Length: 482
Image (cartoon, rainbow, N blue to C red):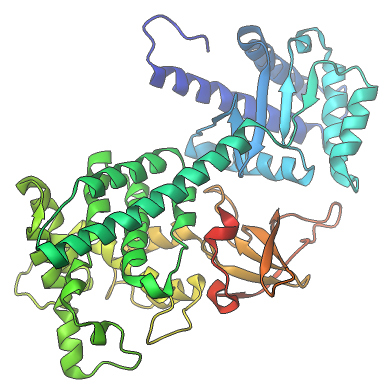
């Protein structure tokens, strides 16, 4: 665990993650074993000794072991714990375990080296029993204060992680706003001057890729922004975000993600040449109008040629905008004679484009499909309209109820699905509750986990009755979840 001379930062982080996984696994074994064994059982006592040994090693080298839960993830010393996929069940079980006890985490102190096995077992039983209480956290705090446990304290529910989280969300809002203004600026310059640079677009995509490296849930939250009057531009930003998140899930390199993000931002530049009366027509397009609309993919390529960018960059971002309406089986538009399959970037942009279009209000369809309904419609086109493997990854990424979905509960409450950990039960996501305000709108309430159960009964505290598009209620999801 101690950083050695010559060890890289990456090596130190990997070592900390490895030791963190060992700690979490030992903790899980201890609280699981104490449920079924008496205190004199050799297996249980070995679990306690293993746990004490790992914690003692941490506190000897670091002073304290600072361990907490925030945003559905574990943090050690305010750093997110990255775990191996084979440990996903342990992580999920421990997240549920602590959530049932309303416990944000612990601070283990050097005094644990002087604790006895029996004291650690008593602590574990108290932790288990807390789930049976109406107010688990105050009860546990009281019990720990009465016993011989100077080596452990419960973490406060607010602190650096939450403060950093707020800063991250504010940065995400600024990034989105900057991306939106950059797309508008490029479009305006092309429309009036015939050319535009891409320096701002490249910079904003780099910022988005930086967000991906830390936590893509914040970016996914931003992609819920819907602007009826500014659809073309918000659509381009949302397509870029969704494409980047999907690209990350399939393991694209940072350089490839940068190219993909630029493709997303410029994929609809060709609409600059489509007459406004066609773009904004409230009814169904005539055959001739639809033919004009179909030209926008090819026109996007023409507009990209006009960008003040290197030949290498143009070469890499030309094809996906051309392909994003061709469909997986090439039955879409524009019609081409080539026999090669649609490019990977083209398939990614296509999925992101259709999802955002379906889940956004349009001039010809004021009522948008709910995010979950949009995914259901797209699933019907798997293998024909969309790459089936990429679509499956995309649906798994967003979940059964994508971020921003408005859910109605059997308690009479309404809530918006918020960004959550990758291993969260997709059928029972985390939601932010909404309460009516005095102006006919809604205000933000507390965030709850729909997987939370009534202690001792196994019944869920809240169940989903139906889902809705938030715009139906005049709700802009990003205002409440970020």
